[in-house]
Image (spheres, rainbow, N blue to C red):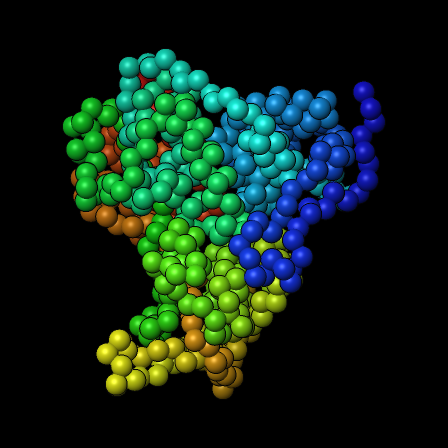
Length: 472
């Protein structure tokens, strides 16, 4: 056995030049070469207690798949990953490894952790490029399960159950499967062809996907049971946008991040002649500091904005977005206005324009400077306004990226389904709701969270459904 590579730093991820990528929607990170992947894999110490695995919500056997890479057995590595993960090419791109598996890597004590996410991406991409075979659908075990929503939790639940022989039908409200993976995450971070490939793999396992079906409108949960489904998993996400309720939010040119990103990512508003238009050019303010805010700001830049601001009420230390996304945004020229909070959106009323809405078109956003006070319930220092510090940014578009909540439609049409004060569906440790036979997971339960945590919830519910229906 060769000695481990004890270099302190991980192999850097190749990426497009910031000045070039800021004007295209091609993927920013271009991926490891085989040489880089082998070199990075050899930094893994193959620890016996495997602390990295305990940091993974879907418990990928990380040292085992990396050991396969060291051996040059890349298909073997892919097989190890897919024992527990249904979306390896997605996870390798958008999971916050730095706060999960890599945070617990022993190599991170005296240097940088092993690039686990980068290696997962390499293995998945190599498989997708070279493998021509589709997985075989297992023999049907006689049970049928319905899954509501084709986001990461729904796809994971469906995939895990399909591998056990269940007939699974996924019902998706939009016209394309993938949930937040296709409407929320931009092409330059997660190419949609990657998502389509992962969905095709699930279809090969026997999963049926029905699009343009809104559960609660087209069909109800009761009707799913009436159609012969023995269990229902709700993974409908958190698609209800939050707003600040400040003056001027109804101006033309104010978007929720959900609408803004859906128009661009799913409806292709960046095309020269889009069917669903969106802003092009001008100045844009994105309110918020999470990953969604970074996605919206970087998308606006690529749509042709001459200036893009991130307006966030806390400091850089409290910014919740991934460090990598923040660094990429800064490299691309996004202007971060930290310790600032909007108090009003200004609008211009054109009485002669019949298209002009009630409060006119956006002309600016007035903000107040903040300072950090005592910690709040989340442990972060509470931002406090500084009196008399108001200032105005001249902008044409404002995007509100301050979080989302679960849509109340399914709750309002499903008897016996209880939710908490934030609208999240109440579940037990197995993902079982207060309605018999109905399970839930992901953002529909927690509110907006990470892709991998949603996948973990889908996996937990799939195991519970299997135990309930199989009697094991």
